[in-house]
Length: 155
Image 1 (cartoon, rainbow, N blue to C red):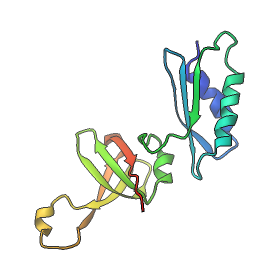
Image 2 (image 1 turned 60 degrees about the vertical axis):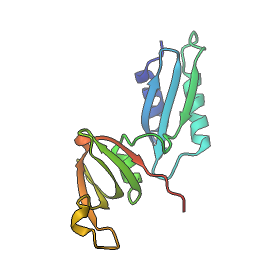
Image 3 (image 1 turned 120 degrees about the vertical axis):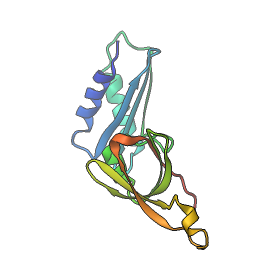
Image 4 (image 1 turned 90 degrees about the horizontal axis):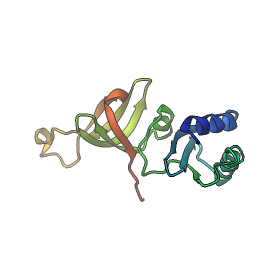
């Protein structure tokens, strides 16, 4: 049986001398393998094809009934890694904390254990006479973030 750890080792070995980093691997009981990679400069189709071929060529011979997908995580997937937060510096994120607090704002700082978001002040009552929203910095420890997603913006 193909395991996530086996696929993870194959991918990490293949990308170790590139700017790609592994975000996630899933292997379902129905033999669906999803591999998500990213880089600070974006993922090329050729990167995905190369990784897909490497994985295919290293699967055990008796495991040929599988569905393999190698891609970047895409904007619909939550951020998982510290590097993904760094990559998205300056972009708007939707943050949901483990206690249910929801905040949308611009990612302005990423440190080792927390991020900082510049968002509209939640205490709007104090500022109701102002025409422009009042922005405030909010700090979230990585340990308290349930999900963080990039907000898609069309200009």
